[in-house]
Length: 206
Image 1: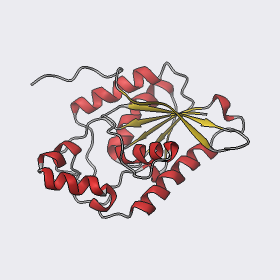
Image 2 (image 1 turned 30 degrees about the vertical axis):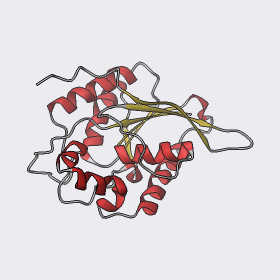
Image 3 (image 1 turned 120 degrees about the vertical axis):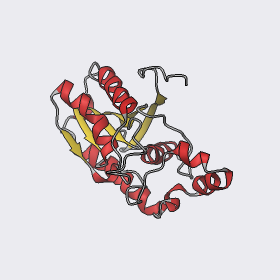
Image 4 (image 1 turned 135 degrees about the vertical axis):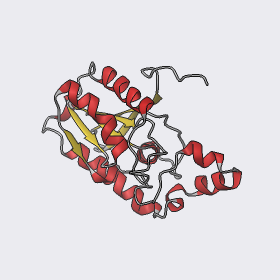
């Protein structure tokens, strides 16, 4: 089974109706369309999404192109799902070095969560994604629309890294995994790529 983890497109951080779980802004929708154009050519057989608006909206263009449903798996949600207001990593950096260090020291605790519980939920979502595949899953190719911290959890787990945060997935970036089934490691994960962004439109220069 092949899995491509897609980070959501850029959300509208200033949205007043859903400040805790904002929708995509205009360039985020363009990023979602670019993801769809690329993945529509790759034989995707299933689409999975976090329950959060920015991930679900990023999944929609691909679902329309392929005529596939979007399956929601709760564990793919971001650690900030219960905060009152979404803040991007760009905003957190702008709050100053002290705030950024506090975030990086334990991003899960920063949002009021527990690192062990969050890690368990993400890896449970990965297991559910794999186990829900067809009996012969060698040709399955699943697109999972999720967030930066869940992507970090999966990569850290696959690479045997102790800390959770090692990578900075860009908006609408793609990280590719291959589920490896061997006698020694029946649930091993191969990492094929991290933070692919060549499919995205150029970022405007302001």
